[in-house]
Amino acid sequence: MDTAPAYSHQTMINKWLDCNTPAYDFALQQGRLIRSSEFSAHVAALAHTLAMQNEREISLFCRDAYWFAVALYAAWQTDKIVHLPGDETRINATPATLRLADEPQWGLVIAALCEPSALKPRALQPYAPHTCQLVIYTSGSSGEPKAIHKTLQQLLTEVRALESLFGAQVADSLLLATVSQQHLYGLLFRIIWPVSFGRVFAAEAAFFPEQLFAMSLAANKVSWIASPAHYKRLTEQQPWAATRPHLAALFSSAGVLNAEVAQRIAQSSGIPISEIFGSSETGGVAWRQQPNAWQALPNVALRINATGALEICSAHLFPQQWTTMDDAANISADGTFTLLGRLDRIAKIEEQRIALATVEHALQHLPEVTDAAVFAAETEGRQGLNAVVVLNAAGITLLAQRGKTALIKQLKQHLIGDIERVAIPRHWRFAAALPINAQGKTTPAALQPLFASPSLLPQTLAFKQEGEQCQLQLLITADIAYFAGHFPNLPILPGVAQIHWAAQFAREYFAIQGVFSHMEVIKFQQIIRPNTLLTLQLTWDEARQRVTFAFTSEQGSHSSGRLVFSA
Image (cartoon, rainbow, N blue to C red; front, side, top):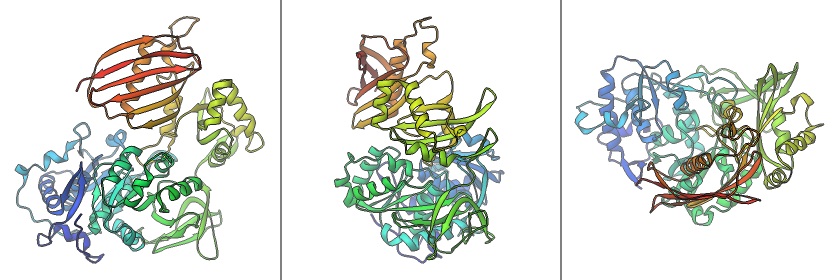
């Protein structure tokens, strides 16, 4: 890939605007390299259209990072204030009535506004970073998302710090992300940094491990922009040996990376993960490569206040003044620091203050558990904690042998003495992985649907996917809605529910584009009762556009068949 000339930090942001600058590779979209001259033309076309709109504030939501960049820089050309809803459910929550998107259900389609017929002569102007405004929204991990106002100047200050630390390592690699640019981490690493310094970025997010490795193997060099949740899902079975020569740098943010995961990925990839610590409000604060401690980013000063909270004075904030974070920390004599947990995740249960992080830590260290998350909820007028737990192989075996009620009782018994009795979760759900949002964070909003009653889906305890085959372990709980009335005093799972689940899970794990056509060789051999532990085996035949499924348990085969989709 051809990259842009090495311009100075101060002027690099304007180089793609300059028609006298030779075109260079700008972005990779669905396997096609887009040149900087094409990006400039798209920005000019969209800026012409936006200049005729009276609205000052616009909403921007895209899955495609290239069209996102076109809209962002076109909006700033026309002095618009850009709002970035965190996900599609928040699009209507912003005050902006003019909405731009890459799909019609979310707003005006950016690509359609940039058609060649819309191009009219318009000279693109250099940006005044202090006047280019942006509104991002927090992830909602500790409450309702809130609006954070930023300027391009703040964003540029931060990416200059990233360039000074990691520019040589990233070099001319393709920036490949698993996270969304709708949040600050993805915005900086996927958009502002590569656009500013002339690096190629991938338009598509590589959300699934298979995508991440396939796109990496297709490139010369890549740098991964991912979250702890995504790194946690990478296994030793992935093609690490073939991928290692393609890896330039690995980045992680949006949460603290588990030490075991950091070590495992570093051994598999041959590269330590560079973690970035910060928040939507503060921007980047510090970085580390485990097992080293956190150290401040350039132009960030740190101190601890009387309550033990971390305070920062950062060039990423205007005005530059001491700002208190919601994180407890301990600073060493050499200036490095360790994090001691969040101070804002406190729940009041029966008049006692309970630190949710402490409860999660206790759960995560149970011998049957891989991961866990909790949140406070009120049920029948009583406040308590709900827990979502990821079981390991030993935990799943116990669940199969003893049942859900007995396993939960055992887990509760293990917690006694480690945490307050009132902090022991009242309601439990088991999952193959903690649900995450587009930024790779587990939020109360992502956890709450698992407790909706009655449920329409089984609890997924584990899954394993290799190419066009996928195996899931499913817990069929008694509160599933399909048991109601089928039949009184003898609940069994309807066959139509099994077929529906097979189709739904197949669409989740395979790239099925067609609509459902018909079924073939459907067999129902044994009934499925509540509290059964099932294995669902799925095989996708892309050439024939069909999925073969089979539900089995310790009792044997329950159902099987093929689902055919239109081409």
